[in-house]
Image 1: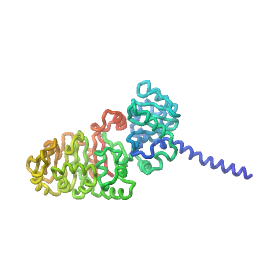
Image 2: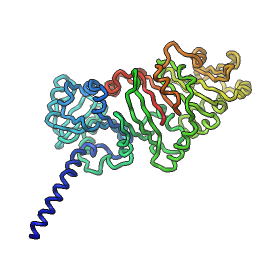
Image 3: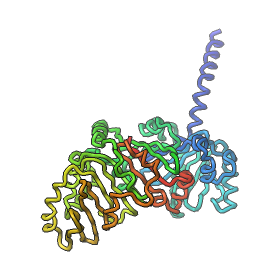
Image 4: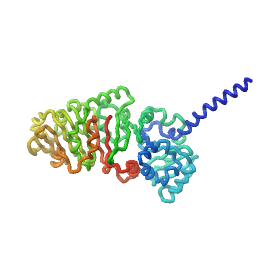
Length: 451
């Protein structure tokens, strides 16, 4: 009797464990993501397909039918960046046999190499750049890499696919944060994983000396209307003291009134919009390494600190094209004071050797030196304007022939900070650009909004 009772209990326990064991095996592909990844992106293919983007997903993966490649699109796709700076992807495999057949079919078209086996896993190389390894449960891709680097990439993929539960990204604060974002595309990344110039606006407010690995960016991506891709994000830290300062700094940014939202040409590469009290805002800039270096360079000729302190209202910073020079940006802002103009005479006298400041018009001046030209001035209605040419400087205060789409302008108004990115100037024809384009579809503009 005792034996029967024990066997019955063991049978019940076994039945209870079945769902748990099944759940673990279903998440094997998450265990393949390095635990120390510096950036993590989750793509919900089902939501993208639901939002009429099935063709984009098909284009990205060269599929005729979304169900014929052996990848389980009911599970999210994950892109990650390793501490070495490599880009990776992890996907759940529904059928290793179908996946092998799909790659072999693509190899006939020159899209990838024929599948081969290595240390119990199957491998191929896509477009001579992306090394892909997979089992019956998970797929991992790494790249882009040169042929000489692909043996090392294959070894890393073997290591990732062999990781046990608990070795991967699951059960980490980064993954928990990512999993809490309910959007078709979500991102959580350390600031150091993103380009310095791109991430600089997001790290404003971090305490001076804070390491970029301690500053995190979380964002959700959603398709907007009329070719606009909307990103809503926040900067945070797992360090309580740093996080407290980041949250406190948000109070410096006031709701944007929209004075300059129509002044950015749609062809410009980037635009940043905000509304600030300059005397408070300058303190945040001095705590930011990127802006501190930028201000140091500009302050050798023009007292930009004083100009920024004089701002009280909307601000627009526009980069017409590539970040070719420190003074190549356009800027316009509502001023609370123009007292800094009284110091222009001193600026003229103290210009570094080989540079000069000359009069350009009423309350307007031109700096030239060190291969740079910078026009700046104050209008009669207390607006600061500047640019690398006289035409660009003046144009910041007027509407261009082709401004930003009206829907984008409306979205910017009322936000604390917004950044507009022109897709055509950012996504090239390289391997990474070709991966991004299908996901963006016909998107022309990316709008980042600070939560």
